[in-house]
Amino acid sequence: MLSVIDSKIFEIVAFSMALLSLRCKNHGSIFKESFDRESTAAMDAQQHLLNRNTIESLKLQVGADMLPVVIATFVQEGEAAIEQLQHIDEQQLQRFCHTLKSSAAAIGADALAQEASKIDQQLKTISPVSIDTAPLLRLYRNTLIVLKSILN
Image (cartoon, rainbow, N blue to C red):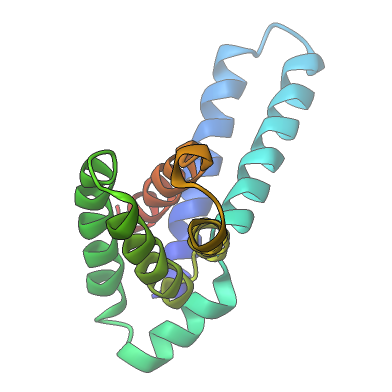
């Protein structure tokens, strides 16, 4: 399934480059250079969000047919969790972050797992009022967007 994931990413980038090329054909090379930087930044961001080695290991563990099911389940549960995250207390937030760091790591979302772990640790030592969960929410949303794009 990883080859399908890789091909989807390639298709998205190729399609975006083709569109940009058509839109900017008469505007010189500055647009292509700008797009190349943006495309590289998008690929870097995706690599930052997802660990391909972990996804490949997960594929070997669950099988190529089940990998999309596992990813889709993570995405569905994540979307529901984001909605609930804004209405939970300190204890629920700590339990949520503790669980998220494990499930995110298992699916290959290393950056999300690290952010959840950071907040989990902060909740053990710092007043919950001073903890900013906005970076976690942004990272969670971005990770879900990337995961959804590889499923489609």
